[in-house]
Amino acid sequence: MSPRLLALLLAVAPAAACKFDGSGLGGDDGPGPGDDGGGPGDDAAPGDGAPGVDARPPDAMVDLDADDDTILDATDNCVDVPNLDQHDEDADGVGDVCDNCPHIQNAMQQDTAEEEAGLAPDGVGDACDPDGGAINEILLFEPFTGAALPAGWTAVGGTWTVSGDALHQTSTGATPVILYFDDGSTDDGWTSLVVDTTLDVDTIPPSEPGNSNRSIGTLVMYAPGATFGTGYLCSMFDSLTDVSAAALFLTRLTDGGSTVGVGPTGAAFDLGLAADQTYFTRSRAAASAQRCDVVARGMSWNQTAADLTHTSGTFALRTTASAVSWRHVVVIGEVTP
Ligand SMILES: [Ca+2]
Ligand SMILES: [Ca+2]
Ligand SMILES: [Ca+2]
Ligand SMILES: [Ca+2]
Image (spheres, rainbow, N blue to C red):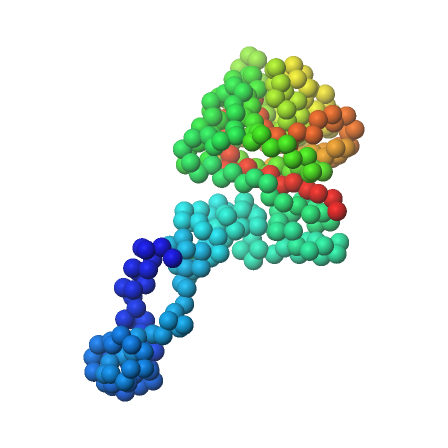
């Protein structure tokens, strides 16, 4: 227990002891349970027969701060995991560090999706579990609470800053800009990676020559390259000059800036990509199947492709001609039992 907390407990001890008297609040007013005297004040030794209220026996003391983070259990949003900052990204009353879906409100923390498959709960809540038939794990939760890019993030073009509990990308030029994550881990035990983001579109510039297309996407299984790298791009795409071209694309990005479409060629969605809107996106890539969802729009695209040649665990955020703020990024890995 911290010295600060101990001091706090000692300061409140006389008031707490009164509760054991049972004869009234506000000092010692006569005989009562646990009271052996009748005089005011508190004597030090339990059961000593001296006037006054006996001190509480040590074994009756309750640890009011189970995780010793100086936030008492009664108000701690993670009772068993120290979290002095009490940050609660999704405002569901459960602190980030103990929330089994830190980005989706699920105050009940239900985790029963694995039951049907005869598996034990995997610690990923039903509200965000990509597959109850597999064992998943939240590999990374980045709420961007600091004042700078967290460790492991690298920009390829663009201006990226962190402030106000979000990551901001403010470049709106026609050239794609990328921010990728790589913590140096080479764990390839995962059969698929899921990347969830919640983002706010801040600005989409008016149509300009060479700047008519705008897109916001996530690259999964990303590997940096000489130009833009490789990976599967789940992207919301919109065009000011051709509304019918607005689409949700799943594309295989090849280094050199070109893409090989594996998404809905010719299938147009009215995406309505616009400023002042919030989107929740989920991108998923496995060795032979990819999926792209923009949940807020009820849109998704599945693709089976066998051309995946890299299994890097890294991922990236990518935009073209759009200023965007990401509230958080969550990466969930999956192991098929
Ligand atoms: Ca605590
Ligand atoms: Ca929460
Ligand atoms: Ca939650
Ligand atoms: Ca689960």
